[in-house]
Length: 262
Image 1: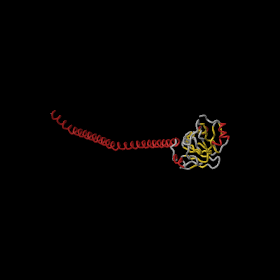
Image 2 (image 1 turned 120 degrees about the vertical axis):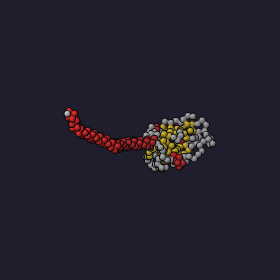
Image 3 (image 1 turned 90 degrees about the vertical axis):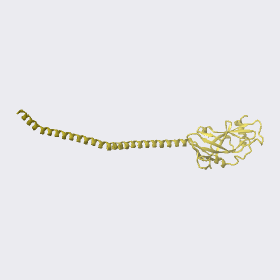
Image 4 (image 1 turned 180 degrees about the horizontal axis):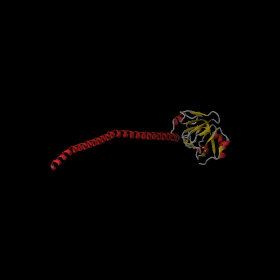
């Protein structure tokens, strides 16, 4: 299954793509340009219409897109076509996720599904050389029964059912990273708030404990102090009483001593 070279493609280009331009044939392939319609996820089902050459749009990181070719493509029944995205777009992270071949017998505009796997917006514009298509000859032409006989690509617009299949919000890596960063900041804030509350609670517990200890300790100390004062007073009174008793006994002892001496 040999691939068609540039010379053969230039000869047959008008039969393969419409409109055709000789400068679009390069290195054994035909360059296909961005057409007049696109769809990008995250836009609430809004179809992007590019009216004039140079009108552009953006595919954000982590979002899918559907891109319509400017050229109408025809694949003869004795050939098979292969499609890809040009390298400069691949280098920015644009990935073709719609398949890599076009069936023998296909005749219509192509809609390529892509995904931005990069970290930055990818901007495309109407008329920009975006895709490549290669043709390979089959050893035996396809019969009508084997060739593509469907109706896809007959209208120069992206079919509604294509859009419905990928419409909706996509949880892109970028949005997930943003969400995780916000969650991390909230958790850190909550932890700091909890630490402050714990420190405040510890302070309040310390104050309450000190007050509680004071409420029980002061009366106890006061009771002990009053007891010591009472005991001291009793001892003083006892000493005074004993001294008085001794003083009262001293004259009688002297009298007894005098009597005994006589």
